[in-house]
Length: 582
Image (cartoon, rainbow, N blue to C red):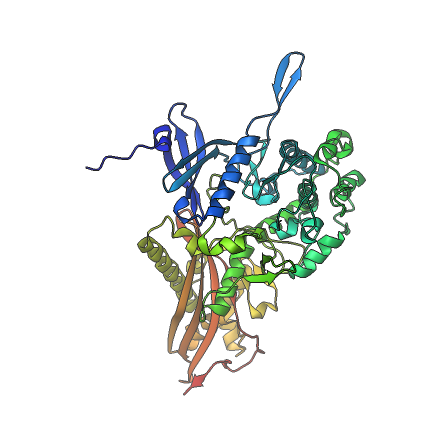
């Protein structure tokens, strides 16, 4: 019988269930044996880290230790501990092949997700949210730390209790600075939240965090960001120029004081930008009860739902679209742009992935993964699917850190990975079979009620919900009687093949499955359908499809799909753009 190896970590902590997973790390709940207190342990596989990655890991741990002590204010010989809104590091343990970072266990989920679940949300609530964020930023700045990656994903709630503290997380990109020193520390952050000085490659410092706070506050008030463009270069041009506005009607109900604070945060000149300490003294925050509006902002909540869904799913959707285009010739490449000074900066086609310039040099060797946030999973899973903005348009940006199936291989046996891929293929086959047989009940069991889809027949729009799909299930017979064929291929089988065809055969060719953690996956494939129409004529049709799957309550559900193809006119006499044979 093997004797377990005792290490400092296992001697002091008992590991529990997994909370998250990334390329080189896994996050698990753990219990401190001597106190019974619960924490979250980020376990980093150091075998895959380069020397530079070790330096980053040490920097992150050093900064977290530096910030872990709460502020103490002396008042009449009484020490009052001020609530610290920073995810604290309690322990850092280096062992052979693994490094353990023990953090606060936060169970309240993301701040932005909590807001949309509230029954009431006002401008005053937004003021309270940004106040807590600014307090954490001010604490960082007072200790000579610049976060560099402030965004919604890094704003967590300590618990699910009403009024739970907002916690600032993920110091993987944080740096240490001396006083108000400005220097070039490298290109780092998330594009939608980057400051003008970073994009201009000018010396920068603490003001970059205030700019990101301005972007976050703008979103908190109306539910969409101040800077947006699908083209990253145009997005950067907007940011560098400080080109944002307050469009009607959503901004008409926002108080002038709130806009004034945003203007001072989104000042292009970092030297004139408001500081965290000054912002905390702004009337809209300091005198919230008197200045900020208490009117419920339902439109903001509605827009924020779309914004949340978009940033959660867009990375996965773009990946499946890329796979649909490229699966026959391999995985798509990242775009690497050569800068004038010889450095290389990775650009994201989704214009929102967290970037750091020296990551390019380290990619081949592996790197410290920052996608595993120290946060307990929601029961619904980590790929929340509520709503989504207009089809890759409209005022929303994404901020998703996406991990493909490669991210799981460090901790999951290859046999288990293959089994999960086969499970996704099987679920896709079951979904197509439900379409083939016109079984709407089976179809709804496999699909998320808020299923989103990009279809040529939707005229370039993103379709959400089941009504669009149900129409074809309900009206197949009627359309057939009128001999009008709408070339909506997923349902053409239902309208024509299921009712009027002698034989149908569907084949999934070249399926490529990308696993997204434990509860997400996307599949790209060619769908080849052969059938005989009621006149005995043989037809073959091909389409390229991709689907995003999410595991909820131990069941896979299709949450999004994308289908390529061109929309032809109706009344095509059962014709297709593909080949046909008699």
